[in-house]
Each structure stands twice: as structure tokens, then as C-alpha cells.
Image 1: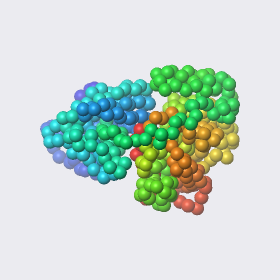
Image 2: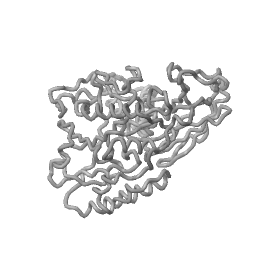
Image 3: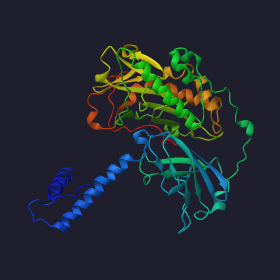
Image 4: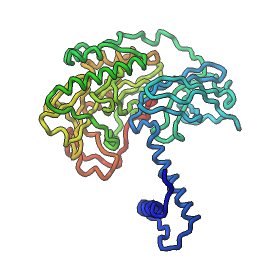
Length: 444
């Protein structure tokens, strides 16, 4: 990089004064030492911002799955699957929290936690080892907690910044759990025959086979996307990619719905999650481009019987957003989970429209029967508890957002509230005082 000359420096100072309103004294005599300090401050400011933007972050659509197993003697193995295009570098710091009290467990004075294998490459899995033996009272941690309480880590790659910290539950003690309380998988993971029949024959094999191996899954996805492009290049028209504007999101209506009567009212919204994802619940690509994202509303279900909040994510509602200027042409299409549709065909699924974007609820393209789909999701996990009460919770979440999602979509940026329209209730303007719903995603 070329060194800064006086003209470069003055340009930076002008930008700084315009952004901050601070007068650095342009008419004063030039002081090389003072100006050097200003320059360093500006470089640190702009450099830090650019660096933060490039880091792995759920706010940028980066996705991961994380789980922890206590190995004994204060050592915890944390399994991480990085679903992003970015490499993930955990910082060697953590917060150890107790769930019900919300209090942080303080480490012993002057002792550090030991971390090993903190970097997880893009589109791969790895195991990070965390040794707490020197930093915490392990005897205390291994003492069972009462009333279905538990511990969890908060891990980070950027000083616990929002969107760059992740929660991960960990059990340090054996609990008296009756194995029969956990139902066996109800059905194998298999394709939804009703939906597969509507997908072009060339693309069906991708949706008919499932694998838990990340490298094999990524290879199948690459083959699928290449085949999609080959088929779509032969058509007359253009596929419009789904977009994911970060400021357009689900906001709180100000009223708390009841999803599960066994959960306190102030925790009801913590039973839901909101994510931006490029894949569905089976890790299949949702669009014809690798970067296409949908806004996904999920239900959280317990990991153990008696847990009052959710832990396992079941994606329920898939919202696809398109730039309004791109969908007006008759020969423009949407491509969702192997299906090519005109926007005239998509019209019946439209739930929101404003000056810039149009949103569609495309959940019908991901499953044809809600109960079978949820049971299939649960059957993939060994850490999910599912019974009729949990099923009722999922139904309530699904029904509420199916009915109200169109009126809950809105902008975080107050400057864009003036022209938005909720199709389900055009006379109900969105308040800029409302905030996003859902608890922080434990896996993202």
C-alpha cells in the first residue's frame, strides 16, 4: 500500500469531520505529529470496521451447528459444523452460564481456560477441545443441578458481539433419565413423495437421498447446482434469485402468543427462532444459486423431557423475498427447491409487499404434511424429545405465524417504515418501536 501523502490525509480528515461533526481545525498550522495521531486513529477505526465485516457472523448469513460433550476431568469436546463459505476462528475465551439464574459462573482467580483446535474451515466439521480444569471448580460443576437446570457456554469469534456469539449447552453430571421417556425415531429420513413427484426428473435424485457426511453433502450440492444451471440455461427467461435484506425481518407485535402452557409467559417467544438460510432442514439447497437465502421461522423443541424451553431447531416457515423491480417481467421465474414457477403462480403465496420487496410463504414446497415432516426432523436427532405436548407447541407456533406473518414483517430501519404494506392487514402499520422476535439461535 502506498504511504499517505498530504492530499490523502486531508481527504481522510474531511470524511472524518463529515461523519462525526468534529472540527479538526483545517485552518491551523500543520502539525505532523498530531496529524499522525489522527491518521492512526482513523486507520484503526476504518480498519477495525472492515475486519469485523469479514468475520464469520450470523448477521451475514453464516451458519453453523454446535454441540458439546463432557469428557470428564474438566474437558469438554465441542463439535462444530461450519456451513458457511468463511473460515470460523473461535477466540480462546468463553462465558460459563447457569440457565435458570442467568448468572455467569466466575472462574477461579488468575486461572485461564485452555482451548485447542479453535479454527473450523468453511464447509467442514471439527472438534474444539476446552479444558476447564484449571479455571473452574470441577467438583462443583459435576454436582447435579436441581429442577431441570443446566449449564451452557457462550462462545465467540469477536468479543461476544451480537451475531458473533453462540450458546451451547453442556452437562457436567449424569442425570437420572429413564431411557423409555425418549421415543425411538418414528420414521426413517426419506423424501416426501408428493413433493418429489413435482420436481423435474433430472433433479429428483438430489432430494431422494440424504447423508450426514458434510463432504459428501457438499459434493452432492455442487453437482445439483451445476445441473440446475445447465437446465435453466436452456429455458426462455431468467431466474430471479431470492434476496435477504438484513433490515427486513419479523418484528414483535407487542402481544405475546401462548405456544406452550407449560412455559412461562415471558419465555413464549424464546420457543421460536429466526434464521437466514441457504439450505432446508435436510441440508438441501433451497435455490438455484449457492448464495440464495430464505428467512426461516423455526420452532424449538426440548432436548429432554421437562425442559421448559426449546433447544432443537425445527424449521417451519420459509419466506422468500424478491426485489419488486425484478419480478414484473412475465418471463422471469422463481426457482425454489427444484421447482420453477412464474411469479403469477407465486401470487397466491404472497404475504407482504412494499416499494422495494415482495415476500412469499413457500413452505408448501418443503413439506406436504406438517406432522410427518416434524417427526422426520426429530428422527434425525438423538438429542430431541418429542411427545403430544411438544407436538401441540409446534402446531401452535405454525398456526400463529401462518396466520400473522404477513403483518409481522417490517424494517428495523425507521427510515423505511413509511411505504410498507402488510397484505394480511393493510390498515395495520408496523411500529418502528417493535423488535425482532425469537430467542438467539443456539446453533447459528
